[in-house]
Amino acid sequence: MNDNLAADLASLRIDRSKKGPDRRLRTFFGALLGLGAVGAGVVVVKPYIESRLFKTEVAVTEIISVSPAQADVELTATGYVVPQSTAKVAAKLVGRIRQVNVKEGARVKVGDVLFELEPDDENAAIAAAQARATATTARVATARANNAELELDYQRQKKLAESGAATRAEVDTLAARLKALASQISVAEAESRASVAAVTSLAISAKNLHILAPIDGTAMSKPASVGEVASPAGLLVELADFATLLVEVDVPEGRLGKVKPEAPCEIVLDAFASERFQGQVVDVGPRLNRAKATAVVKVRFLAPPTTLRPEMSARVSFLQKALDEAKLKEPEKLIVPASALVERNGGKAVWVLVDGTIRLTPVKVGEAFGVGFILEAGPAPKTRVVKDPRSDLSDGLAVKEKGAT
Image (tube, rainbow, N blue to C red; front, top):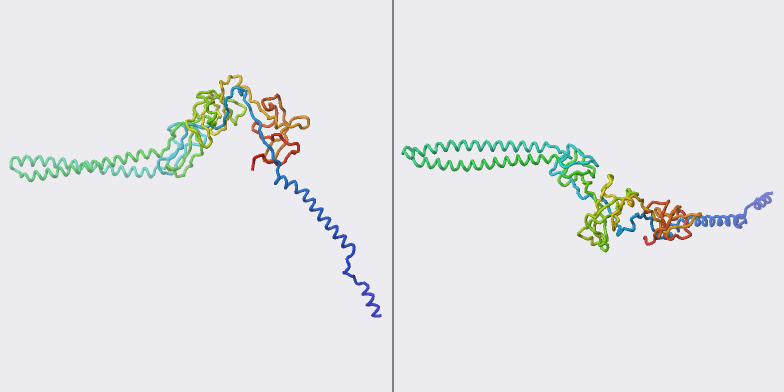
């Protein structure tokens, strides 16, 4: 009975040395799932990697604005509005600021008090100098009184000596004392003059506690605050005279011959791109910039806008003749290069470059103008667009500009 039970139990034991078909199937399907995951990852990641490591290279051009006076333009250059009269205000002496009378952007006149410094130290120094001056003046008065008394005694003794009532030695002694006293008076007078001069100097220095505007102008920087320490080396506020604003542009050396003194110009400010202003050449710089091979040309506004500010960007066109009122009122034309246009959905479009990616932007164009077309509706001037775009470009594609590293 026991032998039969042992045999039955032995028949129920699992033989693990043999691999069944279920285990092989699990291994196969597991490998298949792993390959599928890798393939999906490649499909998803590959475009991302390619877009980052192998960006499509594109040539770039831009939409430009053209003046109605283009036919009369000899040369065009860009630059900035620059004040010709400026002042960096600083203190003449070291002191703590007690009061500030100017704000950033405020207009001031010559002589306006901009800052006031604490006067305590200067007042104490003036009082001490005045006391010294008073003392030296008193010493001079005392010496002069002594001299007058000694002079009387000398004259009396001199008469007595002539009559034989006094000796010659007494007279000579008084004469020597008079000479010594005269020297003392001279020293005292010199000390008195020096003391008075010191008081005058300190009084003049005290006037420097009030820091005045050296020019008519506008405060271009935030002024120093109450409690700050002013010194000759520290800037308190910067002033600029807006009445002296000129446009300074860099003109290449090879094209300076096209710039004539008092020649008419057209000025366009980036801040007011739709407006055009008449200008005139004021000065051609006497010295060239060797590194850039350019010279600075200064142009003034014939009728400057009230909103003109320093450091505004400007474009200056040097003209053969001055603009008439009709042309001055005509708006500028926007020109889109023909090489940037593509056909999309029965209309025209351009690929606009924004932060390293391209966006398809519809445009409306008019008649041909030079190597492009007048842009009636579309991106703003100076918008960068793809030149000679490939047919496989797509919206949002990351691109690399040709020639960029």
